[in-house]
Length: 278
Ligand code: MN
Image (cartoon, rainbow, N blue to C red; front, side, top):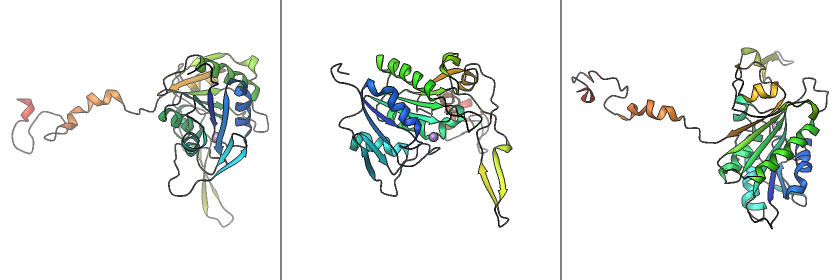
C-alpha cells in the first residue's frame, strides 16, 4: 500500500444501509481512510452468503459515496468492487451487526458473509457484531463497539493480513469500562434443542412456525468465542473459507479405490482375496 494514498475502505452490512450499526462503523473509522458505504436497502440478516442471480439489482446513490443495493450483502460487495468503487478497496469492514455472530451463527450470517466475499475477492476484511441486551428495550452498547472497532481496524491496517484470512469480531453488551479485554478465539459450538422452533396457530387454526433465537447453552471450551463474550471479552476469531477437513483426506483416501471402496482387506465380489491384501 502506498503510504501517500489514503486507504480505500468499503463498508457493508446485513442490517441495511439505514441501520444504526453501519452509521457507528462509519463514524468509528471516518478518519482512517476514504470510505465507501455499499449496503442492502433493506435488512438482510441471516442472508448468509447468498448471491442474487435471477432478478436484476438496482443501485441507488443516497449521498456521495453511499449506495443502497436491492440485494444481499454478497451482492453489495460484488457491485462495490466491480462497479461502484474507483479501484479495489484496501480493506472491507462489515457491520456493526445488531446481534452477535458466534459459533454456528457464522454460517447464517450476512455480516460475516460480506467479509467472506471480501476475502474471496482478495480484500483484507473484518466483520463486527454487537451482542444485544437481554431486555430489548435497552440501548445497544455502540460506544463500546466504536472503541473496539477503531482499535482493531488500526491493528489490521498496521499489519494487513493475507486476504485469505478474515476476522469476525464480537463485542459484548457492556460499557467500555466493563470489558475484560480482547481474546483471539475459535468458533464455539451451541447446544441446540427442540425449543428453538416456536409453533403457534394462526386465526384460522392452521399451524405456523417461527425459528427462535440461538440457544444460550454451549459446549464448554475456554478458547471459544462464546466463552470469551460470556466472560466480557471482545472476541476476535480469524476465519478462512477453505472448508476442507484435512484429516479426512488421508482417512478416506481408500475410497479412491474402485475395487473396494471400504478399504477393508478381504474377498471382493466373490473373486477371492483383495488385490491389495496380498
Ligand atoms: Mn444483521
